[in-house]
Every structure is written in C-alpha cells, then in structure tokens.
Image 1 (cartoon, rainbow, N blue to C red):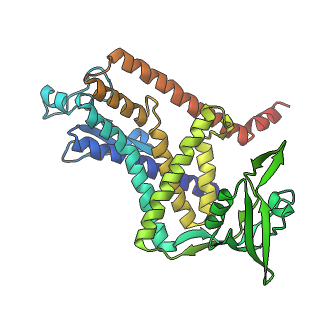
Image 2 (cartoon, rainbow, N blue to C red):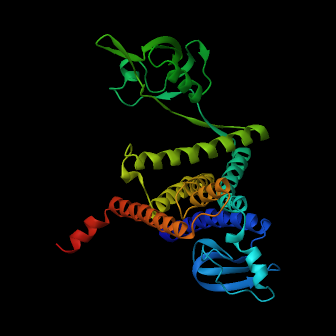
Image 3 (cartoon, rainbow, N blue to C red):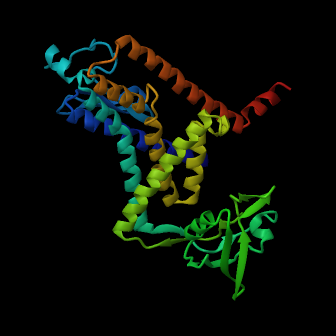
Length: 370
C-alpha cells in the first residue's frame, strides 16, 4: 500500500511539472497563431478526448507520466504533410504551421515551456513562504568531524556564533559569508557555549614552502532550522532566488559531468526522481510541494540546454536563423536533430543504468543464477 501511494505521488509530481511545461508551449503557440492539434494528459492510448472552440483536441491518455502538445507542422521540419482539419484550407494551415512561423516566434514558443516551469517553481516557493515562512538556519553550528579544522581549532557541536570578524551573526548564511571572506587570513569568532562567551581565532590558511595556501573548508554545518514569517516582498525575493539557484546548480552539474569534473554516476533517471519524491512525501506535505518546485526548475533548466531535440536546441536554431536572415538547410536541421536525439537518449539510458546499479538489481539478478 505504501508503494502504491508513493507511486501515485510520483505520478502527480511528474505529471504536474510536465503538463505545466507543455501548457507553456501551448499558450505561446496559440498567441503566435499556431494551430495546436492536440494536448494530452499522459501518453499512450487515448481514453477520453474532447475538442475546444479552437479545434484543439484535449486528451486523457492511459499512461499518466506527463503529457504532450501536438502543433500542426511539428511532425516534419521540412514540409507540412499532415491531415488538414475540417473547416481549414491548405493556405490556413500553411499560415498556422509552427515551422512556417518567423524565427523569433519559434524562439518564444520553445522558451514558453521552460519559462512556465520557472513560473511554477516561483509560485510554489512564494506560496509556501507566505504559508509556512522562510526557512533559515540559525547561528548554532554542528561539528561532527574531529579531524576538521573547526574541531582542532576549538569549535564544538552546539556552539552559537555571535560575531565573526566583528560583524554580528544572526544566521548561518551570514556566518558562511564571513568564513568565505576569511579564506587565506584569520577568522575571529565570538561564540557562546554553556552560557559563557568565548573568543576564538582560526587561521584559514596553511603555509608550504613559504607560500600561503587558503583553506577552503572549515568543517561546520548548521544545526537548527527555523521558519521566519515573510512579507510579500521577502517571499517574492526568496522564490526567485531559490528557483534560480536550483536551476543553476543542476546545469552546472551537467556541465561538470560533460567536462569530467564530476562523475557520470551523478546522472539519474526516473527511479532517482521516484526515490526523491518518496522521501519528500515522507517528510511531509510542504516538503513534497517544495519538491514539485525543485523538479519544475530542473526540468526548465535542462530543457534550455543547447541540444537539438530540447527547447534549448530549437532556441539556438531560431537565433541563428535570425542572425542569418534565412532558414537553415533542411537536411542539416534534420541531421542535428538526429544527433540531439542520440545525445538525449544516451543521457536517459545512462540515468537508467545508474538507477539500476544503485538499486543493486544486477546483484539480485546474479543471485538468481547461482
């Protein structure tokens, strides 16, 4: 029963972020005069279907993992070969085909999906901030590693940092800023321990062959988290900042994997997302809703990668065509889309492989044949 609930929540999480993504494309496409043939909630065989006043068929499909938008003309980048809907002429569909739109319009249509994901993330975090408050780590620190610089310098678990380099410390972020600013110099702390105030100086550097080498890690983590009531302005600021941070960090991780600065094992697939959604659901309602914001920002950011088959690739093509003032060679566009398909499929297979390895499914299969 627990597994079924987790699976249901996973479907909801993935469904919401993907459907919002496709709705972003739909809104911009319609505003650009593109005929949208179908919008499906889910994939596979269609269970229910109904057309609206603009002749878009809204579908409910069997497999509820997200959804898709079908725009007229996007089945073939070289020509319009699709069935013309009743009541429309060939000239109408030529005008309303997505690949007959100007490059700047196609750019906006491609950007509509990721932009919708970012809006969803900002909205969710903004709402949670007003309802629950803005999470903030206090100035109470945790020191676990006895070999860390923090421990060997005299810091202990539960210490409350009052001042750092003469600046008053109210939360862990302020302390972190002072630590970063002190790399290569001496960090001076005023702390409270067991009701008493103490001063401590920590050299954030080492010396080798007469050279000063800054120390990057002190070895402390925040110990407590509190929620502070937020004004509308503060909630808006933290929602935009956190959405940007989540998107930026995931894009940076992708580039680190590509440039071999990080292990390819960091790439995950649907199983990883399922596990994360399961843990967030176990942590409570707010945690799960926040996970929707995180996955939404990640989906938006990943889709902006300049890879053909992704929105980012379509955006790059549109920009190039704007600069050149003419469409790119059709065969070249088809070729790079095939390359993009291979890249995306490879990343998906890599994520699935890592998921299966982490689940130790291969060890389980091995035991079956012993």
